[in-house]
Length: 298
Image (cartoon, rainbow, N blue to C red; front, side, top):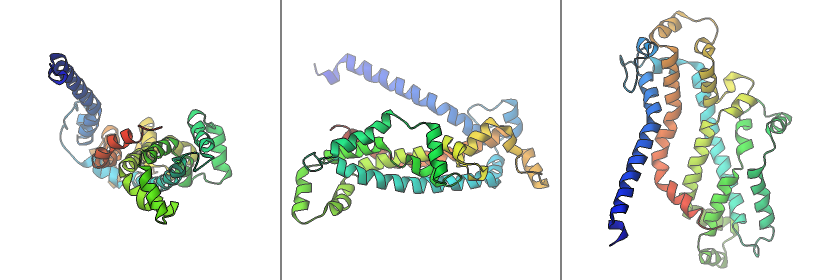
């Protein structure tokens, strides 16, 4: 009897699918609840009547959230951070992974530099020394404090160098024989054929930059320089930001009458999660392929 047609195999597939579907539903429930809260009225949210479906559907919370200058400013900071951080990180990863993917006969110092990078995964400089470095380089309260400390992503370098090492050497040797320089070989040949791995790294980098909040909290002195996740974290732990900004105008009081602290937080949290939810489906087809191809060869 073929193993794929056996009873045990069928039972395993059924149980595995049921487990994965259940796990996916459990992971989605909190997000669905947040979405339902964001579209519900202030009275329904305050009364705890909102579960998985909006009660007294309204867009007031989104209108109020998008009118808050603090939210819009933090959103702008996060967008700048993701764009600059992703570009810089990808450049550093590509130009670091290519020479490290060569054999020791081609790059004698390869082993030294591989360990030089790898040690940073095992050991960290610590929070206080890192803060002192950022301060001494006068990067506090600047966008560079959010980008440069994490620009060299060693895990991504290891992933990409293994992908480079898995490509046929004959292709690289033929290009070099034809007069192609290493720089041309990297950008005109290696990078185009590494799209699956680069898409995976792009996803890791974008999500990491977008979701990071702690560095904004310790490196930014002014709340106006907070990235979106830092602003939302501060908003969740402190109800004072809900009415922050000094004296409230008549328009603010009218808006506050239509929303509540819970619905406003829910709408802003969902708006913060929306870009990742939109981006992931376009890169998902490359995700597993990039992970597998980048890990089969050490």
